[in-house]
Length: 90
Image (tube, helix red, strand yellow):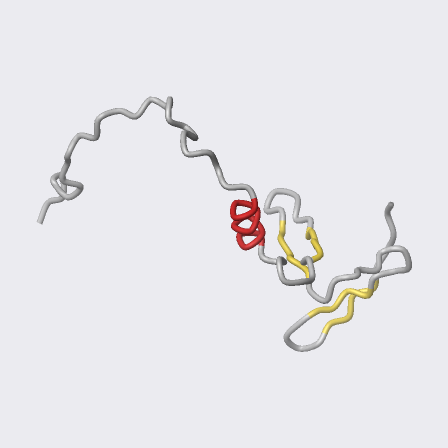
């Protein structure tokens, strides 16, 4: 769906008046700008106790923990000790 929205400007900020059909149920939104196209994208923030994405993930892990042998067959190379500053010149 495409529509036109009104933009109102004050000295330090702009507001966008969303037209009918574009109402948001959330009190806040995430905003990001596509640097290539210049498009501005609004994404409603979820309301409620699990609105934080990481908190939701941790809650899911608590409800259904990973098995003890998770990734046990994964190849793990031997770690070689190294000095991260050895190439620095003083």
